[in-house]
Length: 150
Image (cartoon, rainbow, N blue to C red; front, side):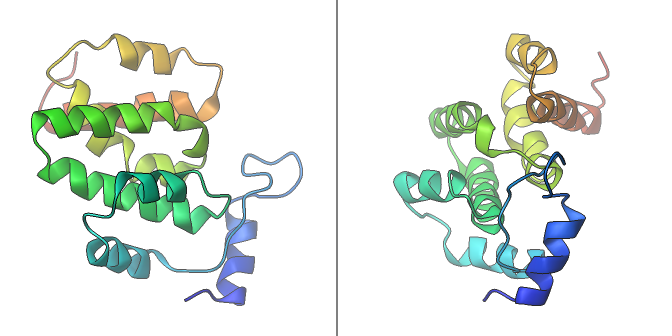
């Protein structure tokens, strides 16, 4: 499904050059609508495979994993939601570009923390890691959409 022209554009768009925020990220050139379709097609994929995708050096594979996790979280029981949240938090080093964070943090981290202890959110906000700080910010969108502004 990859496309070399799209991959090349993504390398520039996501700033993958030396010293840039996406340094070293690899793209194969699959557009987001196709990724969303794949996520629906592979709904229910095993946790081990999803974690493998999330830890991939290929950006689109990480994005696919996050689309699958967001979908699973929305359908999950409370116990399953906790497991998905923990999987997400345990793998933040792979959620390392703005699109990866922006498509997932609100729907997993924000949704999970909205009714519970907010300490993990503050810890993310104080992180030395740019992407963990962004996760904290984007997670608050879930609160905002529920008119919770504290």
